[in-house]
Image (cartoon, one colour):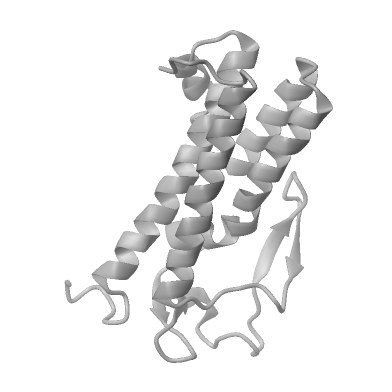
Amino acid sequence: MSKGTPDCITEQYLIVFGTVIHWFARHEGLMQEIMATISGADVTSIKLLTSGLNFTEKRHALFSLLRHRAVPVDQIDQIQNYIEVLHTYSPLRNDIAHSVWIEGKPQNSIWPAWLKAGPGTAIKPMREIGDDAKGFIEDEEDKVTYTLDNLKEIVEILERNYVGFQEYVAGTGLISANPV
């Protein structure tokens, strides 16, 4: 480990961080495949059109298109259920991508450095609320401290969710058999 990396951020943590980011990217790619299939466009074109969008914006684009193309409500609801799992872990993904991490409390845990004083102090997590993220809410219960085992459990949840999501949309014909 380099001298620029805190001792508490081991290679194992970095691997798990990368895996969380990877599963988000896979989910977003699947969302783009759905958009391509229902719009009749090729996946590369949709990826180019949505490359500058964040997760929330891609989610909004997907659901707008699903409603426009009159996809059955039960299918939209099922897709919403899969994407809700991502919404749950978006704060973690954002902290991984945009925060330096330091040793947390309890021992053997880490948290984003922006929370330097730690949970239960004057600094509390503020998270975006609503689909358009036009407001923020203070959340006492927001998870900001993680052990390696916590993060590995989240990776497993994201992987299971992706597999289920991919199988569902393939089974309903919402993605093509040969995505680009």
